[in-house]
Image (cartoon, rainbow, N blue to C red; front, side):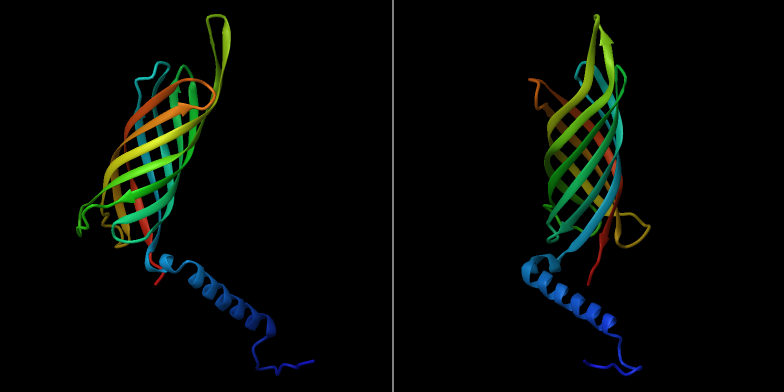
Length: 195
């Protein structure tokens, strides 16, 4: 059995540092392209409206986590929560995967094209009409193109303002029906440097 001198590094500390090095080597070997970009996160507020009968407008929040592979390409996952005004107040939640392309790489304005696809769920209080009770509990497919731009926020060099115009098409999975959102979004985006 090996004995440690009182001034030596405790075995648990040495083991932890060793495991961190092994994990770093594995990540580097498995995902070498990821180490050349930046991790991103963000939050934005959205206002939307639709021409669909029974759903008037909505407002909500969007949380984003993603990765910038280069100055021109980003991939991220977005979680939306809308509070929707229809016959009653309903909730529209969605989770989607997005690819964002920057055709121009300027220093100030950086316009982008964003395409996203995902799943959504519309829930709320039942609606009573024409002697019937209609449950509000639907699963939907969602397609989300967006045109926007990022620019320096003035808060911190790694925090950017992000504004855009979006279109979102929701197709009901169990019902032959769909509706479209048209809206604007504005928020902040944080690029986390790991170099």
